[in-house]
Length: 466
Image (cartoon, rainbow, N blue to C red; front, side, top):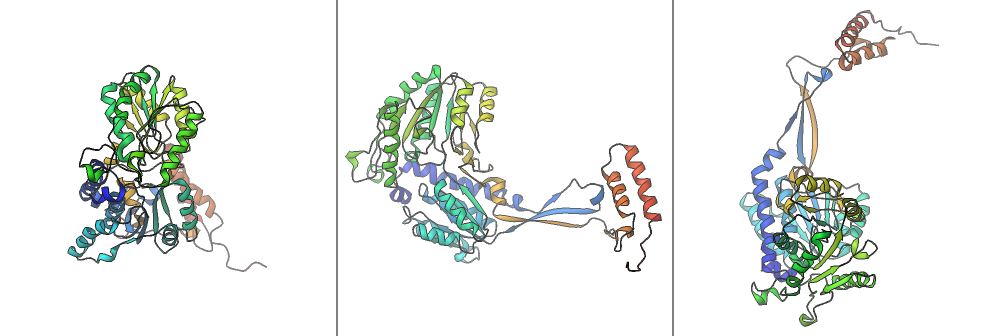
């Protein structure tokens, strides 16, 4: 209810998007976290280092600075607090100015848990404010910045972090494709497609932004989803119990952005099947009608710009080459989905999509698999959170070597000790031949030459040259 009141999503949307992934994050990190951060001994030592043991230790960075977005105020706060605290860090989170009201409520159980475990509750903190507050956090003495938001603001975060060379993780915008092949059961598929588009009013970084439906399935798919979208129920969630399918948008200016994208598309030939404007019956609330748009072409802004709203864009495709060209002709590369009964074909299409994450015959499930790293490529950012990679990214790795056997230590060969012998380079070359030469003959001849060189090497005269 707190998330619904603060962000405008439905109760079901809050359970699916706030509670479920947070609980899974906790479950996975409790089950796997200690093993992931345990000291890791590395094998594979060659001849030159066979007398050494090698290990990697994972040490906490210190303080993580998090800039969290508005779309899931609970999960976006708890996500990095969980991994940050577990890996031994303190966490300071700048919450969105659009969902600041709920932050203190979510923070209370975290601080209580810290006190119960004997730690200071000040290991976690929340700061509120607008742009200058975020800039102050970025340019402070935190040890790492984790930012989720637009690529425009992400570039500013990088500029601020560069002043102190603070490392950053950027999870930015997405324009995720949802590819449908002719052989898919459309009656089964429709529910996943609708949920992927309209969950949280489309305000999802890995929400479905573009549906690419193969030629024969295109019109049947549009015919199936069109009446459902036209009859989606929209209202004020806390006044309607569970009867509403869609709630409100969170950011006021998002309405104008979505209307601009749709107007541009329609002016260039796209077909507006339904929706496409603010829901005037719910003014002054920030509600946008569920929308279906077809006939989108690559020259339209909505083909490449992130919508972040309740708009289903359905695009027809004929050949795989045409499909992948359209899909990848986009600045973003976060998530993606491919649906086909032919797994070989699905995997081939997945391989051709330039994105950080993909699902075969499913949508968004990669995020619920907390063992997987989350992040994108291109303007969708870099770095990862979640998974082994994300948890270890909260640490700095320290590489350590020690002697493996008692009494066996590294000694510098006499010819290499200063002042070096005249034949020192040749002796070093023989050692390389012994360690890395191909074939037993090369290794044997290098070994013989090495022994001879070590035995016969003489030091240069200590008399200074004129």
